Image (tube, rainbow, N blue to C red):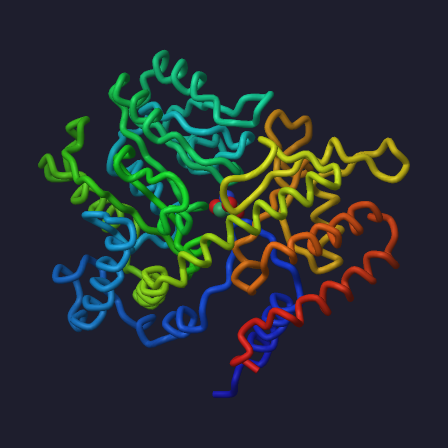
Amino acid sequence: MQKDTLVFDLINKELERQRNGIELIASENFTSLSVMKAMGTVATNKYAEGYPGKRYYGGCEVVDEIENLAIDRVKKIFSASWANVQPHSGAQANTAVFLACLKPGDKILGLDLSMGGHLTHGSPANFSGKYYQAHFYGVKKETGLVDYEHMEETARREKPKMIICGASAYSRDWDYQRIRAIADEVGALVLADIAHPAGLIATGLLNDPFDHCHIITSTTHKTLRGPRGGIILLRHDFENPFGIKDPKGKTRMMSSLLDLAVFPGMQGGPLEHVIAAKAVAFGEILDDSFKVYGKQVIANAQAMAKSFTDRGYQLISGGTDNHLMLIDLRSKKLRDGQSVLTGKKAQETLDKAHITLNKNAVPFDDKSPFVTSGVRVGVPAVTTRGMKEEHMETIVSLIDKVLMNTDDETVIASVKNEVQEFMQQFPLYPELG
Ligand code: DSN
């Protein structure tokens, strides 16, 4: 059979796009070549429904070893007692937790999507808001910080079965101890979705949720820098406090309920090639060099936040503790001194200059989620490319030049050239030619 040039030409085009652009999408990163190699292997051919040692197919002895390696490594990273590495994504990991712990119609309490939360934390557009009764807490208008009083009031009033902490667009650390105290008062479980800051938690650079939150979920491809996928972790296994029975009517430990919820609850065969790549990424995280990376991510985010602030951009909460920042563009007037930018316009114009980020609602936004008043900016990917604090100022100056000239194609084209030249200093996958 001939090589499918159509697809491989497109993949090469995507490689060039990634090489030449400045990648600031907070949820993206560049995996190592080893992670990608593990993914593109014969492990993709194997069906392995079930778990290591308890599969529904023959010939699983090797993938059992691969999956056990991934489990052992991720447990070591987070000092966890149990891990499930099969969720295909963070959304699937969260779905499994809902399936294991709640009954349809149960109340949940999560951070509002419009305040930085995630679709799977109760949005009406998502299963979590359709099948469960979702209530929300937000951030304080004056500070941009999570409104724990609001969380507490809502929890006391609604008595949710589960409180969800974690966000997609929140630049500050979380008070997990306080959340657990609120949950204990009302008899709720706490799910911490650490998809965004997981790599910084793994290296001890942010608060550790594991002793306070009952269940932890994450993606593996953001700050953890692995393949796209999800994980579920427990440090302390515990009995399901709501007495939910498994399909055979048996009460089980939480680890067992979660395993059953992933498979056969809502997924079929695990993606063993992705699990192999997760194992490789987890091995990389256990190396001391990953801590250096994590520290650089935070240093870069803080340098970038300062550069934006110095240029008159308003950051929600005034800065960042982690890998990202959320910018409210409404305070930044265009050259006519009156017009303001929308997130949509900013994203689309920056795309033309090969600077990639995403429009994002800011708290108390007056625009629709398709337009938005803000952009979310993250540094995990540029940090992987080898950038340091001084490069953040260059990036911000390039962004500013584009945003102040959204109607000037000549300026945008010249920034695009500058971006391409700038990125030559930070080679990506030179081995791929
Ligand atoms: N919410 C997406 C993000 O943070 O980009 C991931 O689900």
